[in-house]
Figure 1 (spheres, rainbow, N blue to C red):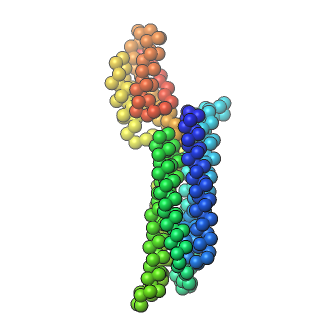
Figure 2: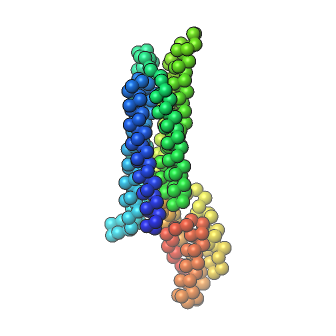
Length: 296
């Protein structure tokens, strides 16, 4: 299970993400309402769901760090996977909202948008903040193999590109005002909002598939073969079979059966299982390993 130090660092990273999301969402809402930019309002809605997702991640990380108990023998790590699934559903709802309002604006020709310095300021701030927190979350996620924090980091890295798309839309609207004959560019803001929705859908699908696979206890691709090869290579192991792998949040559980010399002492067999655990934990640090020895 995660150490107290790991839990503190994971919770701290999630909490910083929540604080950043609160400030960024508020800033986007104010500027979006003041300028009438659908692109910025779409990003504000996206950031609002980012805030909800960040709060869920923060809560999930706190709960998943609790030790196993009588009702949760494998710990509470699946809470991280449930949090990621809920985040995916929220993102899909955001996409529907963005598409609806973008199409409505294009059909109704409601394109009165005020593009000013604040429009660019809020989106530039969004890029800087998302870049900073995605790096922070990726660092902690990789350090402690936290799927919830990694999903958040991937989400915010994608936000950087969606914010860049909105900035492009705002520039296009401004050009339509300055250059005669470029009036068609005034549609760029609504089109940019739809591109944001497409980006969000792509991220949602990837996150959703990964989360569902984790909830279904799908074994990581190739890991079974790697573990089997490492175990069979150890002296005293005649065969390795019935290898079962499952993730619960960031915690990997490994169950394996081995064939060994049935005439060796119990102490010798126990020492061999300890060696096997160490070999597997070199491949997957902090893995929870259960070895069942059988006489050859």
